[in-house]
Structure formats: structure tokens, C-alpha cells
Image 1: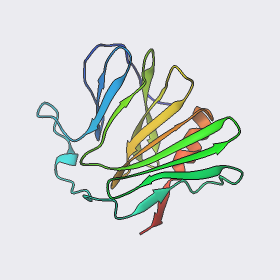
Image 2: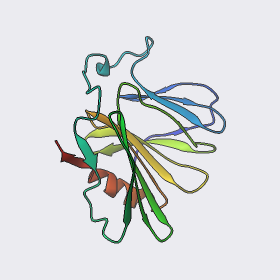
Image 3: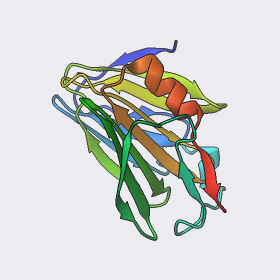
Image 4: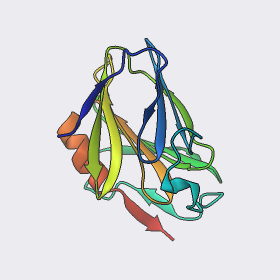
Length: 162
């Protein structure tokens, strides 16, 4: 579904359209922004400084318990759970997004989510993660529901409150 890049390359940088991924042996450090070696069009895009519009999963999550763990000016964190299935949804400001994610022995993929480039990978706990800049915010989804199901959920992420 996309180009795969091994994540065991040491501290090399992988540049994606709107994300900088620095892989290490047991995790990757993901940030937004640009680097002087690889300027991108995100250099000229002005993103909201705080959460002005709320996004959420709009596919049918009936049967899942929804727990809002954080909802503030810089991020939103929602967990959907049903039996042993967990779907984690994060919405974060672009300007200060930083995440250390479990990519030990993983390969990263480029995946199209509604015309935006996402990075995707399976961690060593069998959770698939998708991270992308939707044009306003960074969206980060992680789940043990399976890659294809998570991609379908990701495609349903839309603005729910202006």
C-alpha cells in the first residue's frame, strides 16, 4: 500500500511531507516542522496555535466505550474500547507536536489518508499506528484492531465541531 522504510537505521532522519522521523533501535522520535536540510511547504503554512476545531472518528463506533482523557487548547486524547480492542485517537497542534513511538523492529509505510500522507507502522505489541497532518492538526491513531480496519477508521476522521 506504500513504500516501506526499515526503522532499524540508527539515528537517521526520514523526511515525510509534514513529519520528521528520527528512528532509533527501539523507538522513533517524531516531530513536525522543517529542517534546514529539507525545507517543505509547511514552512509557509500557518497552523492554528490552539485547538480551534475538534476532529473525531465519524465511522460507526457503537458498542465502543468512549473515554475523553484530555481535551485542552493543545491536544485531545480519546480512547475507544470494546472488549480487548482499543482505538486511541489524538488530535494535536502542529506547531508543538512531539511523540516518541514504539518502532522497534518495525517498518514505516507511507499511506494515503484522504489525500494526506500518513506514516504507518506495526509496533512490537501488535498495535498499528497512523500519524498524519490533516492540514490543520496532527492526527495520531493507534489500535490493535488491525491495519486495514484502522485505515478505514482514519479515513472517517473529520471535523465534528467548528
